[in-house]
Image 1 (cartoon, rainbow, N blue to C red):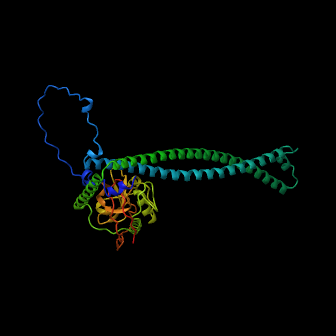
Image 2: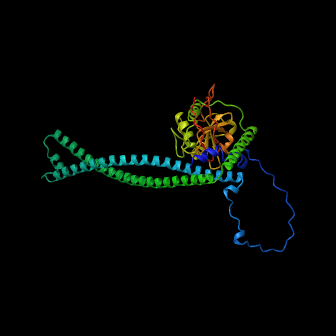
Image 3: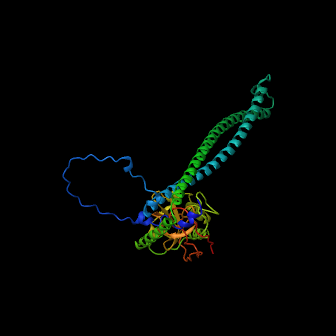
Length: 410
């Protein structure tokens, strides 16, 4: 994307987020309309069939309202972010599958060495048995004819030992052959799964690129005046959503984080100003779930890589109990996530083209919140980290393409 469009859009594209997509926790039910008497039946009238020139086509971007453009952009970006999280999930599965394939390959190599040893031992015992069978007298007959009772007992012990040794060798050989066969099948299956995941990852990557190209193309078709209008619409929409969210009383006071929650917050604050990059999990760039997973990983609590898995597998907490370090998850599909900072603000990687920043918690439609360390005791005293200049600069909502000034944590 050219640099002109990001600089013009600034914090464009989703400020009407709240105006167009209300926060999930604050939906207001609409009373049903009173029933009316049915109208008297009338004779059917055949609809007029317009000629080709009368069929309206989709309006050009320059002819659509700001709200319509915002809806289009938000839809395109949500599709891109959903594809990004699919890519991240596939990448995580592929990483684990590669490790499993290596483990199975190593185990198969060890099993084959053990099988070779078992075969060699079985061969040695077979040769020994053959040599015994070619003598004039069997081992048992020699035992009966022995003159020395102690010698007879010793030979009996040797014979018993040999019989047990041969039986054990056969058992080992059989077990090693079965183990090697099982591991060979598992290794082939793991390799096939790895290839399938690699192909799926390729498709997901192409999907992300295609979605982002659609966003870029739409933005590039807009004039500077339309981009400025989008930016203002975004800012006013998010400000209104945040006021409504806070006025609802859903956030009930300040709560101190746990020790690891504080560590996660401080890590996230140190990343402010770093660029968003889809599929990235630091240290130079992040996507939304890459930032949250790395923050908690550095705090000593590994969590799932994707926002969907974080929402599905971590402990859910009411918004009224939010504390710094908790994760706020957005959109019905759980395709976006941010780390709660406190006082109604979050740290997040908003969208491609933007940078890690501090945003209002209601910048996107809230799905709910999760806590990576539900058993963590709150700190007796908590001093929030100092935010650098420019921490709030840049787009807050999940749309596309702005250049936010780089910042450095202090």
